[in-house]
Length: 357
Image 1 (cartoon, rainbow, N blue to C red):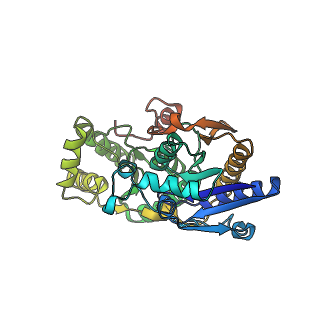
Image 2 (cartoon, rainbow, N blue to C red):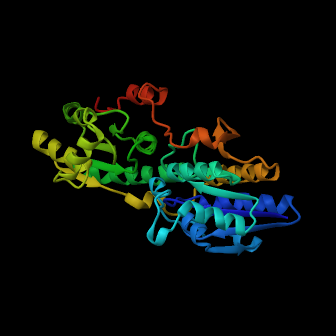
């Protein structure tokens, strides 16, 4: 008998259920005897022994359902080895749950912080197989993460809807999209939605160049401009600051976010009306699109194959159109950034899209 633990950790996204289904259906199909223990609310459930002994029926009808049937929570990696109240040791508690349930493997679905903790548990001797979940598509070692394309669809739809009202009123619209440290979501949605200016963390902007791009469109007879701005976009001046200096500057800012600061400066210089749109958590919600359903199902099946072959300590990831096992130690603690010199950025610039640089 195979005894498998499973958990989802960190922020939710559209294809978590579809991915768990891919793992479970493959195991149920290929193995005569398997038990799956679903830990509730991510690593918290593993710490406190909160789990559900799942049945095949639990994985039925969830391919199209967003969110996660197991629930999730954020457990910061940097707090994992910090001893809590009454001497509570998170790492030892997780190891004890794993040992007491006599698990053969723990399947972990999550983003960057989750992958770091997965690697920590691997180092502690647990058999781990992980899967790359994030709408940011920033996990190192995989070309594609599940949840990304569904989020791009939603962000693109937001930009699409803004086009008509922007044109009707002759306004400048700034659509602020998710992405604190990387700009894959904003880059793809900006191109797909026909944004005129795209600002991402990897390419620090000059506000004067942003204003010039808007002014150029106005002179060309364009009544409106649309900016797709990542929430983590930074100016060239900010890029020169240390992390501590930048954090202090942001904390003392009178603006709710970078988009409002950019919008205010455009209004002051050009006198054009500016509106800010923040789709926020809608980008993580709803059903996975067809692309993500295929991606997550394939990743889930590949993870199950690693379990059956007893190949542990890996994250399953995409290289081109193939799925490959990636050692967790190569994934943990790294981010996959947008390369400012990449072809997709150059092609966007060739189209006339400004990146404010």
